[in-house]
Length: 268
Image (cartoon, rainbow, N blue to C red; front, top):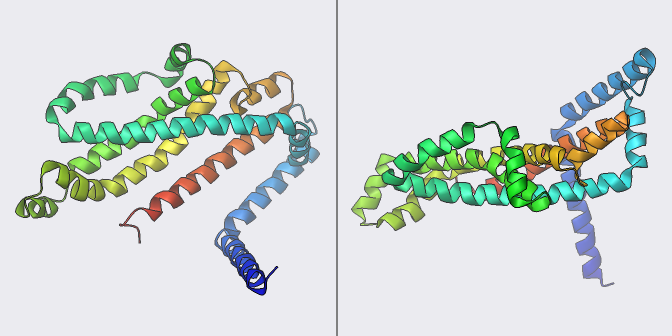
């Protein structure tokens, strides 16, 4: 190994350590709160309840989750795949439909009442229908999650495109920009903060949609793992799965937020 490569590796290690230290410093309060809650949970479960079939302790939850690590890892992969499908569809279709409806008053007047009516139907009722139409595998689960997560991105895109700054609109008219050029260079970038807000909400709604669908279809996802572990009185595994889903939500929300903020010229 050359000396240059050694220096490069050391620099990368130093960067990673600095990032880890910075993350710990920024989140020390949250980490402390989680640690205190875990200690209170452990003490209450072990000293007061003393019944893991009713309320498993934190230690028991970790032990039972690790004992079923194969099922948990499989469930994480299946659920993540469905989330990726649902989120991609929700964002792509939400932005596209939002732009189309914002740019056409005719389409808006014809489609908005139908969209509002369809979205007002309780999602848990629609879930079995989606699974019948699109299958009970990862594809069907992802498409149902996309429907659930579509509306936030759609509404925010519609709002952002429709509420263009009048001065920016005048500027586009002065330079002779076509409707397409105004949409591409002015309206879209003006609406980007609103779109990004909708996208951040959509990732959370996607996770909810996937878990709801997995409750119904069975399979190997984390949603059905909750049902299965509850039926088998493995509450430690149930609690562990719920914690993993919560961590999923936090990590994916942070990842989406980081990625979208990087492309947002209004950030900072």
